[in-house]
Image 1: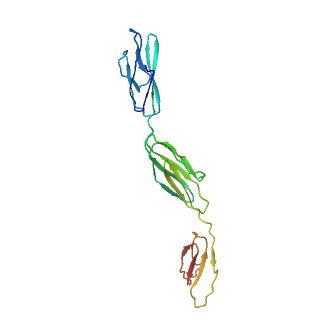
Image 2: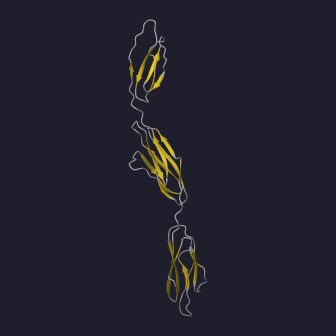
Image 3: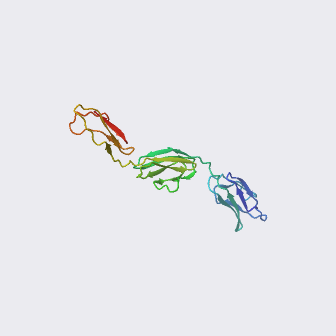
Length: 231
């Protein structure tokens, strides 16, 4: 009496009374090392000690045997409280070229804190290859190539923290035209100019064909639409 007792995760002392006839001997034994009998054998009440629990809920049985029969006293103990988990991600962001590549960051948190890395829905251009764990570990992911000329971005979240991913757009398909396409000069020479017409971000350089050392360039290179001057 009683036939069972419940304990918090912190553990503590417990006891029960063995009732039997005078002269009847008995002994008590525990089937778990964390529930230890502390009274001397064959004395009532039976006292025992339950150790602190650092894991899941558990159960033990203390068996009293004597005279060819036995009775049991059940011991149940609550699970350890969930740890207080905080997270930091290092680095907090990473930039990628249009060609894509592989990225990684460290998840720093307390031992026994379980986590999983999550992407926003419909983010198909980032693939997480190593994205869950317990305690401090690393997340590894890959970024696919970007065929669009527009940059894009997303983030991977762990706990209440996020790792930002930015990717540049593909280089534009560049076409060029020169306006005007020709210019006439008198024998006295003079200054000329024309405009290079192309898409934004498209680079270009200027050169004179042949051995025309009688033409001096005032503009050597540029990007996007821009003027070229020469003498």
